[in-house]
Length: 442
Image (cartoon, rainbow, N blue to C red):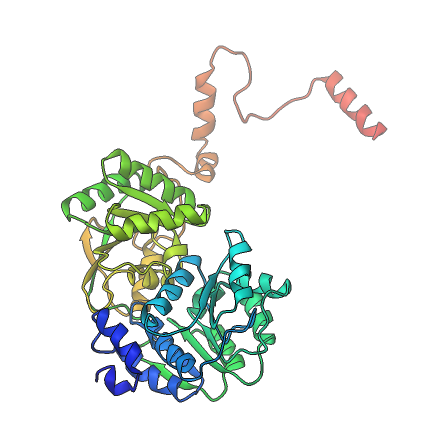
């Protein structure tokens, strides 16, 4: 099938040809006819399969076929995305695919001043792309009304629930007009997502191009078993030896992302970090440098797991193993996009074998061991962080049971004349009398 067979209008086809798109992906070929027909849609597809074009192309065609001036503060289409980066990319996709059409669109999100966004809304937009928090904020101020809404799109719904946006989404959905077309997209479909979709959609067409939470088959997945204090050296070795021209490294915390980026820079590797504590300008600057090749490595938290759409990412490296198995799927989905191949490397510390098994269960495959060994003593260890030196020193409970801790303290000060640390205390008669007097006064 070609895009021509999907009955898209000629201006859109010219834009697709200019981008080098000739054959629609499975999610596009199955979704576009339903959306053009005006049906609600429930789409489930793994990341990197072309979901944005699947809803953007028919929406643009609808705007073109039913032309009318953009009304101030009353968009005809609203698309909600979980992160600023993803919202910006969706807005850019509308601009790219609709370059030969006459329409207005805007992107609104938090972290920046709302003045320019309000001015754009006052001039009128046909299509509005927004994050939930900023959309609800502007609605409460009276800068956005949804009475003329024709199409409502909820993209990456599972990620929005993971980020705690469910209350905001319910408030927004309650303001939607009864007569509308609703499109619901999610990479995974757990029960709470299915419940939200049921409340939003009416007799939807269902499109699922792959089983939920399966990973792209072209991604070569490997795991390295490594101690915590050796991860820094291993990361530098892998980036240097594998000629990673564009690598995305994931950490669990914002502080960790900054630290890893700084350590790579000290080794002569061009790297920067992106996370929620960065200003919007700093995040956009880092993404631009990564996209243009000025940066070879971008270190990110899970904020960016679905918000980065950069071509030709050769490697995704899980410096910190995600505790949520589904986050693993979204992280490695940043490589192997648009039919390309990619490599996903994961660092697994002792004590994290259970987290790794949960990931393997979700993706329905065993991840190939590239180096190291879990060892018989850690194979069934409970998941969660522990002291990096816990294998070489007794735990507190063990020290109390064996008395070794007390012995070490008592031998450290043999000439002090004081009783050993932890020994039973005896009270002088006068001290005991004063203590009893204080108790009586109390």
